[in-house]
Image 1 (cartoon, rainbow, N blue to C red):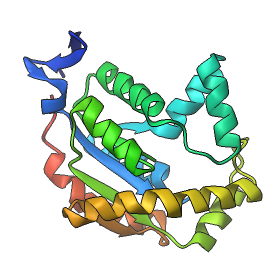
Image 2: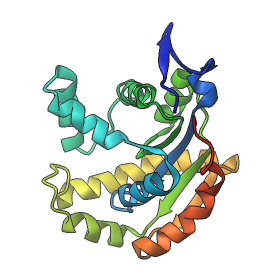
Image 3: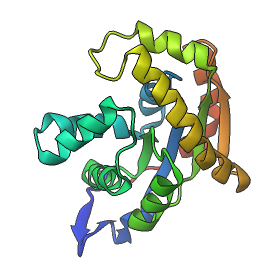
Image 4: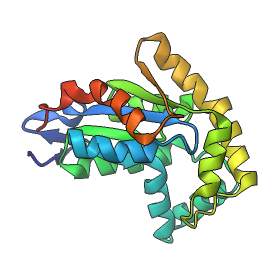
Length: 209
C-alpha cells in the first residue's frame, strides 16, 4: 500500500494527486440510523478507511484547544460546526491514512459542508450511502446508548433530528438529482442492512493503492 506524501499542500500517491486517486463515499442518515455500525463492517469487508466527522470533532474537543472548546459548545446546543473546521480535520485524516478508499460518516451535513468539501479537497464522492430510518426508531436507539456522550439526551436528540431534516435532507436531494444516492432501509436488523450494502461496495474490493 502506497504512503501518501504532501507536496505544496497537495497529497500525492505514486505521482497522482490525492484528489485524483481518492475514492470517497459519504455516509448519511439521521442520528442513530446505524451509520457507525455499518461502516465498521464495510471497513472489515472492503478495506475502506472509516472517518467519522463526529469522532474527529470529539478528538479535537479532547485536545483542549480553543477550537475544541468552540466545537464542544456547538455540539451541546445541537448546532453544526463551521464547514472549514470539519473539512480541514477530514482532509488531514485522509492524507495521513495511506489509503485511497474512504467512508466519511456524518458529513456533509448541509449544503455549505458539501460545497466546502468538494472545493477544498477537489474530491467528488463516488456515491452517497443514505441510511433511511424512522425517527421513532432512531430515538429509541440513541436513548439506549451508554457511551457517556453529552449529546445523547432527549432534548438534544430532538434538536439533532430537526437539524438533520432541515440541513441534511437538501444535501441528499442534491446528490439524488445527479444519481449518486444509494438509499438503504436502516430500520431492519444489522445483518439485513449489511446484506443490502454489500453489492454497492463489491466493485471496490480489488481497488486499493
